[in-house]
Image (cartoon, rainbow, N blue to C red; front, side, top):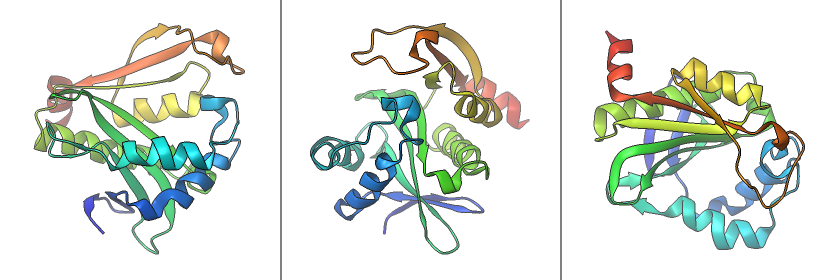
Length: 187
């Protein structure tokens, strides 16, 4: 198991091909997928053919992957995943922060703990200058995680998504944190 980082309660490790069933189970929960697909599950073909290969991809500009499996430090239970992926394959300057955790992990501070650890790692180990994150405007829990992790609201926007889902009529929101803001917060 290749561990990227550990927190008090989490281990973020590299995905392997053996994680396909874990990803499939995560994406089969309608509540987990509520703000992504309107609750529709992801097919095995999509997980194996598209999602898992993306999570196994190494980003040379970071010298690391952009997605990590999250598991409990004590016991090793799979909780979901975190994303810290460069938006430009050739530059680590701007990365996207994301997370998807199973319902058993909700409300326990795991998303904030993992997000903060990734922010710290990104700004201290890599040449990251800005971290961005987005969600549906109505996804208040995810917005709160972004705020607690130190990101600030940047803008509201609407995209022309191929499949409208409940709440999408309210648009999306973007949050961000710059290296300078992160450094000020540490002093």
